[in-house]
Length: 114
Image 1 (cartoon, rainbow, N blue to C red):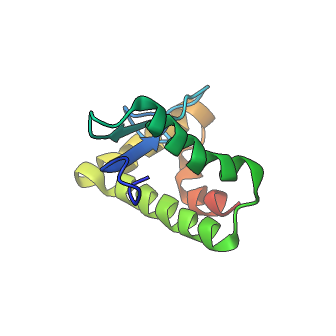
Image 2: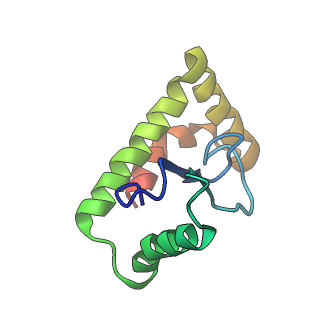
């Protein structure tokens, strides 16, 4: 969408108030984007649908999956290192609360690979 000039940037994910690990329960995947107000909303929806549709209908290639794994792992390490160790404490507390297993933090990279 950026290449077509529809948006300046797209952000998305789950749990905007935290990270993907410190919440347990149903989640809504969210996305937001910044665009020129002269762009018609229909054009934006069409561009978003055009990007999402191949993900729904075609297998994702290995290179894309590998790139996604690198991004997920990088995001995990960023979360762990935030605020002088608060990120790690947050994950330990979340896994202790939700799973009674704070040591789960040690298995996350392996779980991402699955």
